[in-house]
Each structure stands twice: as structure tokens, then as C-alpha cells.
Amino acid sequence: MDTIKNYIDGKWVVGGSGRTFDSINPADRREVIATVSAVDKSDIDHAVEAARKAYKTWSRTPAPKRGEILFRAAEGILREKDRLGALVTREMGKVLKEGLGDVREAADIAYYMAGEGRRLSGETVPSELMDKDMKSVREPVGVFALVTPWNFPIAIPAWKIFAALIAGNTAVFKPSSLTPACAYELVRILEAAGLPPGVLNLVNGPGGETGDYLVTHPGIDGVSFTGSSLIGEHIIKTVAKPGRRVTAEMGGKNAIVVMDDADIGLAVEGAIWGGFGTSGQRCTAASRVVVHKDVYNEFLDRFVAAAKSLKLGDGLKPATDVGPIVSDEQLKRVLYYMQLGINEGAKVETGGQHCTHPGLEYGYFMEPTVLTGVTRGMRVAHEEIFGPVVAVMKADSFEDAIDIVNATDYGLVASIYTRDTRKAAVAERDIETGIVYVNASTIGAEVHLPFGGFKRSGYGGKEAGGRGGALDVFTRWKTIYRDFSGRLQKAQIT
Image (cartoon, rainbow, N blue to C red; front, side, top):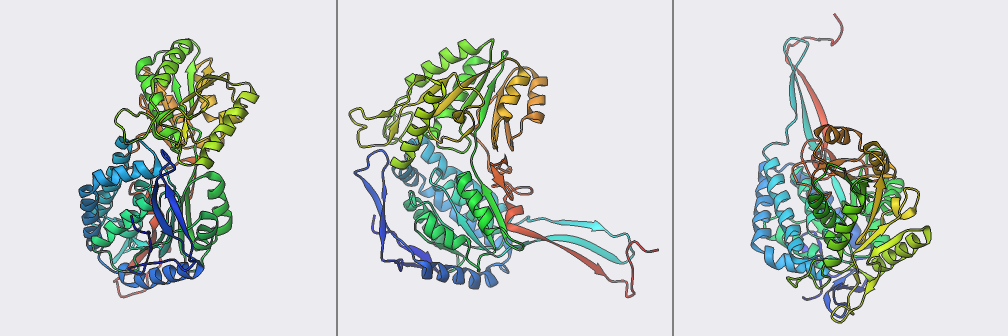
């Protein structure tokens, strides 16, 4: 691939900084996926200016017409699904079937939001007065800064971009500097679908420099961020003010509850997928499994055996179950938590090491890891690790299990495996997370319902979905009263 440029006001341009950075294959750090041109502050100024200029026309373009462009983008994504899925795997590391799923999810949200172009519904309600009507309508917010992570390098940008655009906003998009090639491909597809100049702008550069300048730019009306709680909270404190829309989808310390009446085989499958899918690098990863004491030993034996059977490797190889960690920095973070957990008294049942076996020595591979002896007060029990590490914790009762699930500052997603419908219903009510699964893993959200969490997991609005979801982030409500009586009428005054 040639050097990736930035997309500003409908043109692919070299960044004014004169600097470049490389995107590296985490399965083999010798492979450079792409070299990327980094922007400077003047480029971001230009991108915001272009978005503000385009907003005047784009916000007045009929929403069904905006939807037609998104529909063509969905078709374009699917035409290139195989190539894009392989790129996701090469640039981010997840296994190919997950890379293809990343791309499919982007197409799904494009189709969904394209359809919203013919809804974007408000309300029409009766007035208490004669010859008067009333309605509420959605309006776009303005220019958004969209800041996205590396773990879903096509799907999460698509969640934000398509929702923002269908609502009539324009945007400046800053992807992770670990996955710029995937971002480039998504923007290229939108360009080919007929998106007008300035409606979407792409700027590349490091988060601390490029991202901070973008989200604090006075020309930005809203910020939508996905990433760590630490960075998200920094953005919230820095950016949030009256008149500026800020939403942040952040971390999780998610748990699967396995009750004594659960289908243990099904629960093991769900915990393996939840804990080690995407090498544990999902905000929805099941990093804790809380097991009823009566089935704890059976579950642990089967879970550890299943974890040991997982094959590490390059995600493009069909036999691979678990790919690499995304970067050396992230690998070091996971290894730090391994040592921390051991120091706190946890026991490593399997894994726990950086794997450098022949064929893996040039990648950032971490063995699938199972910890036991973890109590709720340990840091490994309540801090996000973001790697293939699962703590199996023992619960004395159903109530104790729910207490353990809730004993963190996060509240994104949780799951319960049980055949008892009463316990399932109580868990749905009492678990303090934005998403709850019953007899399914913590991974698998669908795009037509809101996605997001409570507590430190989310702020300001949800991703995906329509009403209650992303459309509420990217629109603002206007209420309109029209009196056609020809005389002064006073509401609530008789």
C-alpha cells in the first residue's frame, strides 16, 4: 500500500507535519501494513472548517437522500468484505472469521442507518387548545469529532460515522494510529458512494497530540469517543461544557455468572468465547467468570482444558483460535497484570506468559490465561486488563454471585447461565450493567439496539440503535407549537 494520506474537504492530502508513522502487523512485527502521513494543527483546522462549510448543505439534504449514500456504502463494504476482513486481521490481529465479522457489522450498521433516513421520527401530539398543533422533530447537532479505537477498526468507526451522517451532521474522524489502513478503506468506500466533499474528513496522528487538539477545537459541536476509561474521562473533563455534546463508550470488567443448574458445557463455550475472542481485547470481554460453589470444580476443570486446547497463531491461518495482542505496549500491560495478580495471591491455572514459540517469535502473542484464587478486592478482579485473561471466582449463592458481578466501577455487560427463569429475571433486574445476556456470552451485541454501559463504562449516550441509542447522540430535539386560531391562546390558563 502507498503512503496513506488524510482526507480533508474531499481531497487526499499529505499531512502538514511532514512526519509519518507505520502500521505494523501484530502477528509479525517485521511486516509494515502501511506508512501513514500525520497531520498538524493546521490540517485539523482545515478539516473542521471544511466540515462546518459542508454542514450547511448536508444538514438540509433530505434524510432519505443521505440514506441512499449510506446504502451504496453498505453495498461497497460487502463487495470488498473478504479483502477488508483480511486487512482487519493483518492490521489488528483478530482471527479472520472475526475480521470478516467486523466488516459485516459495518455493513449492517450502514443498512440500518440508511433505513433511518426514512424514519428519524419525532412525535405529533394533540394540544389542549383548539386550532393548535404540536410536534417534536430531530435536528442534527453540527460538526462532530469521532475518535475510535483499534479493536474494531472498521465496525466502530462505522457505528459512529453512519449514525452521525444520517442525522445530518458532518464529521472529522480520528482513528487509532494502530489501525489507520482500515480507517482509510472505510472512508474510501464512502467517497466512492458519493459522499460530498467536507462531510467526512479523516485525520491521522497520535491520540495525545492529534486527538486532544481535535476534541477541544472551538469549531467542534460534539465529540463521540470510544476507548479506555482513563482517556474517556480525560476527554469528558476537558471538553464537556454547555452546548457541546459529548459521549464516551469506555471500558468494562464484565462477568459471566454460572449457576448450579446451568448447562455447564454451554457455559464453558460461552466463557471461552467471551474471555478469549479477539484475544480478550473487547470492551465486552468476559474477564471474570463467577461460578456457584456446587459446580465450581467441574466448570474449572472443563474451562481450563478448553483454554489449553486453544491454538495461538496468525489470524489468517485457518487453524488459529487466538491471535496476537495488538502491540508491544498492550502486551506489556497484560504481563504487568499477570505479575500483579500473582503478587496479590492469584494462581495461574494455565497460560500467563508471552509466547515466543517457533513461528510466533515475531508477534505479540499472549497465552490464554486462567486465574483462580481471585477475590473481589484484588486489582485483577476490578481493573480492566484488555487481554486473554479470565479470573474464575467462586460464589456461595445466587445473591453472592450478583454482588460479585456488581463489585466494580464498571457496568458494561454481564451474562448469566441458568435454567431457572426466576433467577434469570432477577439477574436482568439486579445486575448493574447496560447490557445483560441470558444463556449467552457477553459478546454478540446487535446493531439495532442501543449499546453502552453504566458507571465508568459509559457517558452521555449509547452507540448503535435508533431511539435511545446513537440517534439520540447525534440529534437534538426541537419542539414546535403552531397556533392557527388567529387569536391569543394561553396554555394552562382558563
